[in-house]
Image (cartoon, rainbow, N blue to C red; front, side, top):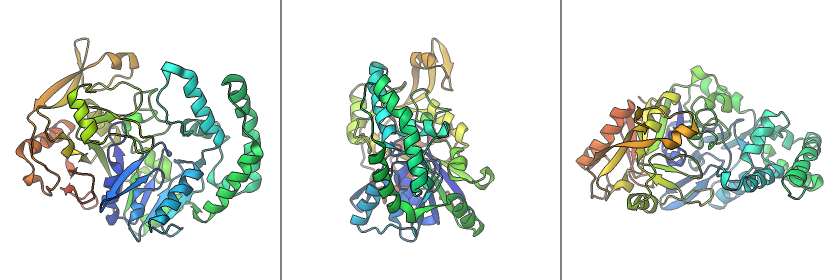
Length: 431
């Protein structure tokens, strides 16, 4: 038996969905433990593209169960839409393969309205939120006035919470943000209907996890976003509202830390970032354009163009420490084909001082400049390669350098978007 956590080591969009899908064949359960539908996983299986926002990508495997943990904030409209799309693609969804934590918080229309109105009001100071209501929902969770899945299926509790919350939310929308108020009855009617739709899959996820663990079966924990979007450890305030780090799996799913054996960090062979915030290795030149175009770097959720740049080992080393990584997965190695030389940032230069850990001060971080080491590239198409030894020697050297600098063994290398375009060096569930 092994319980493995999969985490992003950068700013999200590292390709976690493909790796979760790849590892699902070795597990009984796949659990999403934080975030909301501001995250998106794009997966290509046998030429067909699937985009997931809330449901773990393991849902594509027959006989497996996917869980949405209490740490996730759930937009029920998005979840229902995702269920309907999957069923239209021939994947039957029900309690046998998908369950939602009764303690998961629900994104309400006032969360979305507040999110968008606040971002507009910030003007040039906006942080790049997706406007999905994620942050305001987590705010209500902390303020102890949130609506949970268990309330969604209880009409009395649902109506009381909507009425209570709208008194404050409508005041803020109208008086402070110059926006229109929302109607409590309309919201209640719509959310009551969605609650009835979702009622069969609402369950005690923590209990399911413990029962599965006691049976000696493998469990895979899936985080959304990336380590450096973590609200505690990321580039604050340009962060998400939850804890994508591996420790978030315990609180976001309801399992003890001594039950987690391994942590696999996912990193692109380069770096991307969506929205605002410092990005030390950003490449605003032809190399950056190459990474953007060849990597198809557009957000799965928003369609926004991702910022691109060279691999940042300061970021990756920090993630290795914060998450206690036991293994690394490098994705999109094929995107580097044709670039020469390749660069890896090994330190930050802050006014002559070399840093190997990102400074907490945003002011200091924005003044940092990358210190690069250069490596020869390759021209060969590597999408058909299935063993490490068949990679061009320069590609092997590039990966070996990442291992050396991070201090973490590489277990998986992705050389293309399809499930089969993968080099498996070590199975995290078998090592």
